[in-house]
Length: 197
Ligand SMILES: [Zn+2]
Image (cartoon, rainbow, N blue to C red; front, side):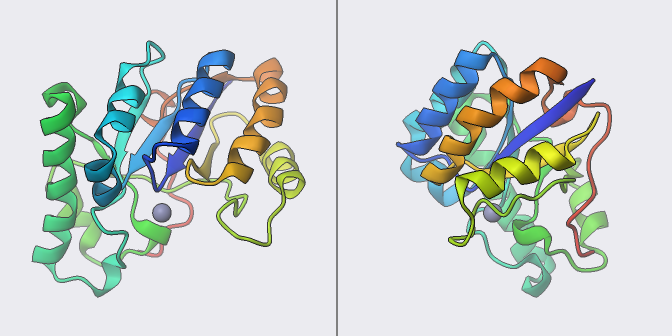
């Protein structure tokens, strides 16, 4: 019974590191979909993600967090390639991302083929507790994840919000009793929920 926890929009120098410490404490491997402009500012945080013995996966969440649907093919390729090149530059070629998560799941017809032609796979999610929203509380995030979690499901969270760290402090020990944790590439399926194209 494996499940996947995924974190988007980092890395940063505060909550990403707190989340990593928490994952370490509970021995939970996770998948980090990083933004290029965040990784460029926070090399050390990205290195800390990669240095974990838990073998966290690093995925590509685009350079700028723009809307893929509004991009030309060249812009889209550039958004993805720049992140891959930066990650390899900082961490080495073993860390070349294999997965792309489009920001907000936005994808236009034909872009899937374009991304797959770059030898990458597109990753959505199954459970979205909206932890990025200011309206959400720690409790609502916890309830949402626990009530919807099931075998092989993947949850999308964000490692850039203190509320998410607080929610994970409570969620991980509970999930740990019932599930093992896998990165997306080790989950056995790639979730496609949340994608528009
Ligand atoms: Zn995002």
